[in-house]
Image 1 (cartoon, rainbow, N blue to C red):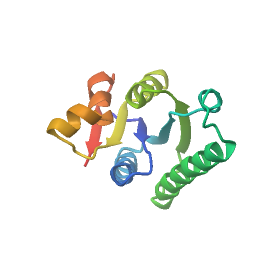
Image 2 (image 1 turned 90 degrees about the horizontal axis):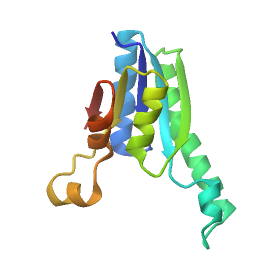
Image 3 (image 1 turned 45 degrees about the horizontal axis):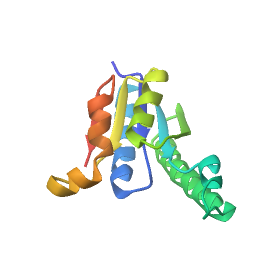
Image 4 (image 1 turned 45 degrees about the vertical axis):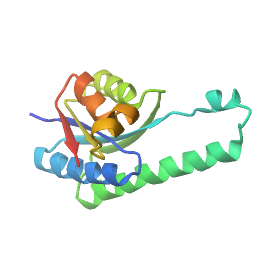
Length: 143
């Protein structure tokens, strides 16, 4: 039985599809839904860079807030009431998602995938594939 769903979102077209699928799954299962995004650049790491600019961090925070707000609005429009949005930090996006899911006791993860294959997959990696490989619970990958 699915009770707690974690849905990774980053504002991409693939994650928009994941948001829609997670909302449908949460509606059908009567589950709570948490949208998560992973911040790779934090104020601490940015301060160590010669290119640090607080305006860049503010713009990134505004973008993240907008992405999460859009996901939450989609869920609320579908009638879900147990919806939250969180951000976490980490250099490795998949590991941050999996760690949050494990620590939070989630029993299902939803993520999007662009669907790269071959050399593009080898060079760029795949957050979705890493989440599937490392997660403690079932993962739905939406394409």
